[in-house]
Image (cartoon, rainbow over all chains, first blue to last red; front, side):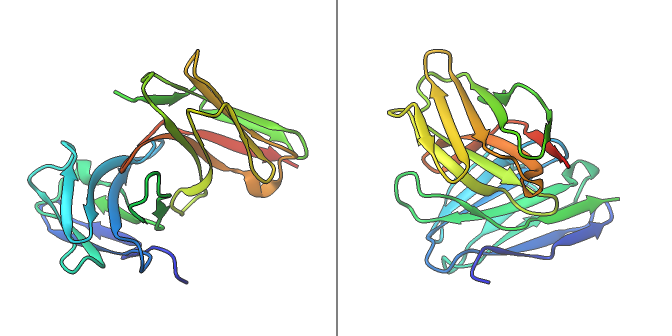
Amino acid sequence: DTGVSQNPRHKITKRGQNVTFRCDPISEHNRLYWYRQTLGQGPEFLTYFQNEAQLEKSRLLSDRFSAERPKGSFSTLEIQRTEQGDSAMYLCASSLSLQGGEQYFGPGTRLTVT
Amino acid sequence: GESVGLHLPTLSVQEGDNSIINCAYSNSASDYFIWYKQESGKGPQFIIDIRSNMDKRQGQRVTVLLNKTVKHLSLQIAATQPGDSAVYFCAENNDYKLSFGAGTTVTVRA
């Protein structure tokens, strides 16, 4: 499968714990995006990378959230001191940096904070 | 607030009939829109896109219509099949960032 992959697919954690998610984009894609999706809503943009550079962060991304893409390939999203409000589906997408380059989404990581 | 939104949260359609899903947007400067399909447990999947220099675009069994005057777009699915059951989102593409509406859940009746 050469699509976007995300791990883990599901994560249950207790409030206050730290969690880290991984995204492996399509290999030739230089842009990588993180979105968050809560039940019944569309995905909301969190941040994006072009190669290893993080070019924008949404105001939704509090100080407890950090994303990295150290070598311009895979990316990690870490949430520190998780809160129940962090429970959501975290989606990763990748694309080529062509104007209007189609974003391909991974299956997401569903986070449940108890 | 949302820059794109959908008219109806749910749509039930008989198998074989045509489906129409509507979406409104608020920013008259928006120039690129995409429809996505999301099945349960999966990420959104690209269906079709349209730029503001067009008012209609067709794909396989799908057509997107864009009315810039009233800031409205629609997705038409011909001969709806059980595999079309999913949540459909319209999204505005601002170069690198997608802004999604809330979604319409389409249920296909046998």
